[in-house]
Length: 105
Image (cartoon, rainbow, N blue to C red; front, side, top):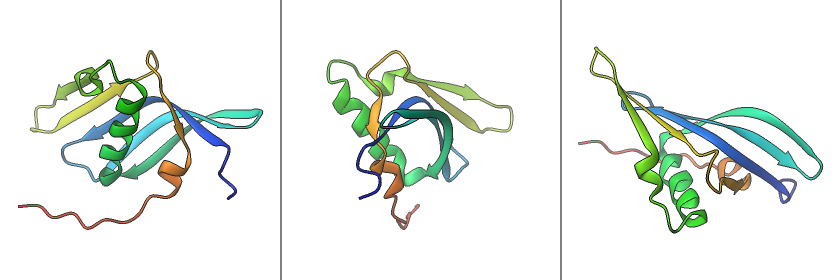
């Protein structure tokens, strides 16, 4: 249980419609120590992250904060800035990431 007290103050989530990764930027907090960090997690963790942010902000629709940038090649980049809302998540959420099979039709 090494990560019991660790938390992440999420500042930003970045992802794309053509990528299998989500870039999570934030501050890792471990007791009295904290530092800025960037984590790369699988796209399958996006729903877990959004659900936890939504639970922390029940009177706000977190998905409405997502900004979409359309690129000329058809790619869509998504950016979610969450510095202004309740954004503290337990670190075990991303440290316990499991590999999921993704089925696409």
